[in-house]
Length: 278
Image (cartoon, rainbow, N blue to C red; front, side, top):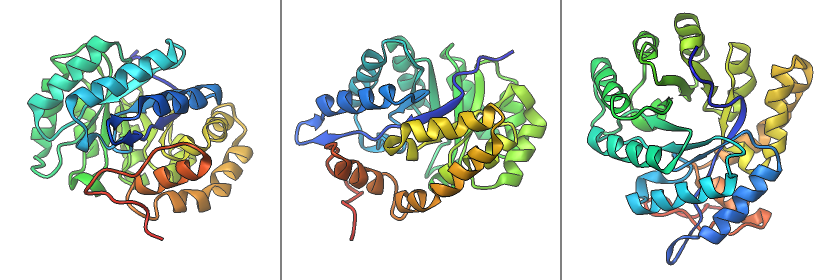
């Protein structure tokens, strides 16, 4: 059976920037808050972390900080995807050498590819590392969807273990679950679909909401996994207004603004993203 990286809620961690680059002191403070509030995993250098505007050195710095902060207490997963397969391989190898538990690899964006190209892209990455890979399907950002039949083919690669499904298409999620079973575990990539995706066999969520509410999001998923469906459903519905706020503008603009209000110092996003518009 393939390795399960985590069950429950994994936070898609924003990156705090200052005039010198990464605000490591604030990142450490935030990661401590997450771990103390029962988050199940930390995902750094992903979309919410603004990886597309970070240098390789900055990504390395953030990954090291997360590993040092966790002390092995929870899984650390690094976003290493790129629309350049060679760059994705190199960043994945760096992350593996640093000691992460797995990598999150988004589909190629802008240049995109075919479904056959997706298989070749992910196979090339998997051939160069031995740690688990989570596919990341987010067509609204990349303009490219991983079809369920492609998921089936990718699930036959030993170290491709899961998919972060952010297509918003529950019928597609059901088809992936039907075709792949335990060979490709599913995490929700949309906070408003966490419990619906868990009901289709998903193991949890890679979440923006949990940056503000780590224990709440953890409890919501574990309520479901432990059979308390009614409480899980209630938590999912009760947090819909906040989720809508967090996605009212391009992620991570709203979550950074909310965290600043909450008492952290995440600064503003890097261009081309801008501060929250009132």
